[in-house]
Length: 129
Image (cartoon, rainbow, N blue to C red; front, side, top):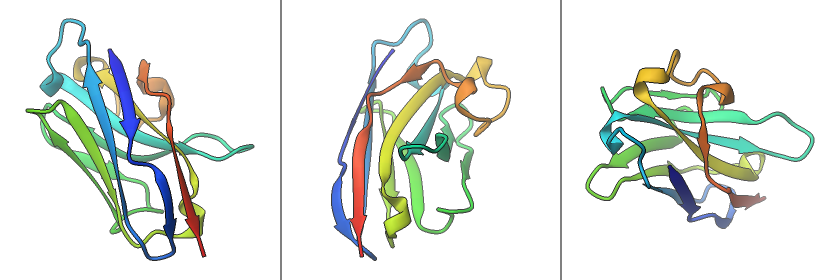
């Protein structure tokens, strides 16, 4: 499974960005049987799970730090998952990764990075004050 993120860049506080995660090269399961998550990481800190989505049943989950500001969504026709980020804050600055796993192997949506076998290379988001 291949994941390619895009859409990162710079924004000012209060601004918006939309990240995309294009998923391809599926192994045995179609896109709608995957769970997709967005994580972020800053140097010296652990990877933080930001938002998660099950393409199987449509359920979503958000970290408290982004709830009400970020929205995860999926376009099955494009096999792409998006992260709409509004009301950005400087503390949102990080390298953002998307990750995928076959839904049958997920024990807990938003259960942490160990739940996911497939990762993209990351896209940088920088929010200035």
